[in-house]
Image (cartoon, rainbow over all chains, first blue to last red; front, side, top):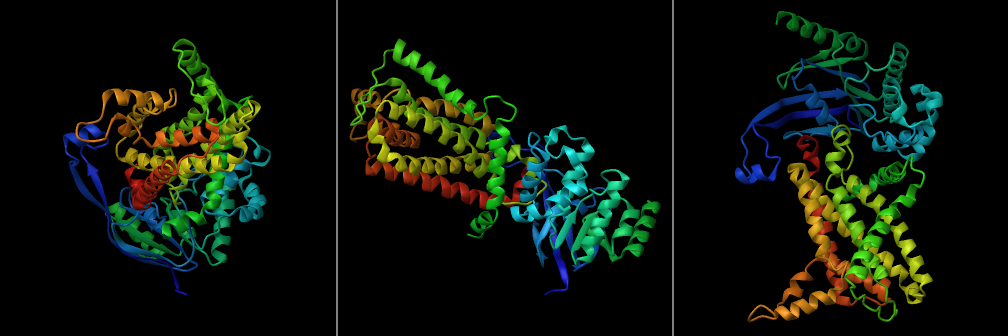
Length: 245
Length: 279
């Protein structure tokens, strides 16, 4: 067993920026299937290692490439070159409630969404009460999801995802959802998660949250790693650099 | 192969997505699943009125079933067609319509077209059940031993249709024209398939025209390149005539199915990793 949960080795990711995208047959024929585009390298040789049982944060300005890296980690994008290795199962939480069917009830959506996130029916059965309890949707459980308030919607989505319990959880800016009570609950859930020896990789713009949750932080800018290290040190450097700009 | 394995691993997701489609579809309607019968029934009434009553088209006699009824002749070909056109017409959009999911969660994308096909298949089984009941009431008892075969060919058509839908849905990611193009192509396709009329009428015209000089190839040979012509012929043989389809027709159907399923699945396996950024 490796001591690293995730190893990212020299990952490059290229996007094509189209001046005029060939999304119709006509333009494709006119241009004979070549289109005017520029290559944009969102990630330029990113390497990092995340130790097992730690919480690792990714920070950086908007457009720095941290979300692209996160999506590569979540297997939604595939690196143009380089390699990402996982030691253990991985689940991602990039947007809560994606895949909810609005006409179906909360109960039905727990099963649907759970299986999209990779849970088996048995596991969902076992976790069902915990999910309902954490989400706090109570008597709305058998109502169609479209009648939910936006807060309830997000809380239900989050409660399902956090109960997937993978070895590695990849999280985008989703902790800022819900009221204070819910935020506290979810931060506690993260702590439990860590105690069980699971690894979390997350992105957030809230430095106070990052300081509270993360053991280590990687600062990314223009698709390159600027610094990796203990979270207070890197966050301080990052904030200093921001002020200088 | 590893892609096939990942599909097997997500069979539970597949089942849940099928349930989502089936349950979500007729939510908040009083008639529920009965609505899936409404479309074919309307089509049968319209086409029977126009072609049987106004144009007085001769309905062929089922051999050996002895059936002679235009509405039944029509519906034996119409139900497979409606299934096929729904799978293709809705399938072409399946990736684009689920963009939110594709861009946020990783799962084998092929479950999207497969769950769509399965949910449409579910309605089709229901429709075919009603048709079989009607045939039995009209004493086409020769059908009974053939029923398992009907199911086998329904499954085969489902595989063929989802293979085509997979190909179309990938093309639609690159070129959104595909959706509009396909809706027109399906109209042509419908009239180029012997659903409203017996294939014997095309044979007559083909004989009148003669074959291409120096060959034996006539209009009918081009006409029968249409894979849906093959499938409709098989379902008519089984349901209307109550006899086994000929071996060469079955072979052609199998060949088409193998080709579209392999190409469709292969395309998905190849393009899957890029799908999120192409959308």
